[in-house]
Image (cartoon, rainbow, N blue to C red; front, top):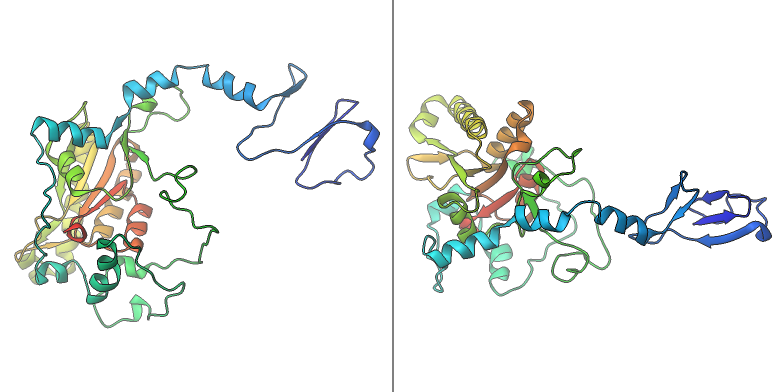
Length: 331
């Protein structure tokens, strides 16, 4: 809340009564800083500038609307354009074949994932779970565990009512601009040249468009995140370390070539090719580019079989992914 006094003093505090000796007859104006509003005291003009005036002056200082219209590209428009031109096949109405048991095992699926997480979503329902997880820590397990299982949320963050982009669309959105970033300290049209992704979970048709077509100057380099099974059996962990190093090298080469998007894909996974866990590959590439001060020059997308539950997506995004396509989950 704020008070303006007759002697041109402004008192702004989180609570009323901070200045105990202030008399009511000395106050000429009272107010509070409302949600979404700005409070500006202009010392040169000698007064408080109205919220609407502040926003209007900033909005009219540059042709932001035209910059966004000319520079921003939506992933949905990319998919629609390539579908209309015949470069991309429209999604089939028929249900895709169920992935084989070998694929599900390789991607870390269990019966619980299929029955409790994926099956409810096929009928438009949200999978429900407990607030707390009392399963043993992954580090203590004698069974193979996915890298994301070694990370835990430190606290239960709850909102009331629940915030989500469907029921709370007027105040929340999952849209995210990805791709090369301009200098955030310089306000120019270059900052609007981004690819707008509707949500972190990228549909298979959108991922296919990104990997196989170009649109409005946007294209991607696909990096294979699998390596030879025979090499893994012969050299153990060294084979995976070499695979991760090769993936990072290819990502750096893509950035050096000026490619705006990099896709890490494990679709080449087979009986003779084993996939580097997507979280390891994503984190390694992200940190490698950060170390080289190149991360803001490229968007990083992940096309993977092992993302299946919310925690998988949370860890992937937390370690640098701009979008994730869980193609086995979609199948």
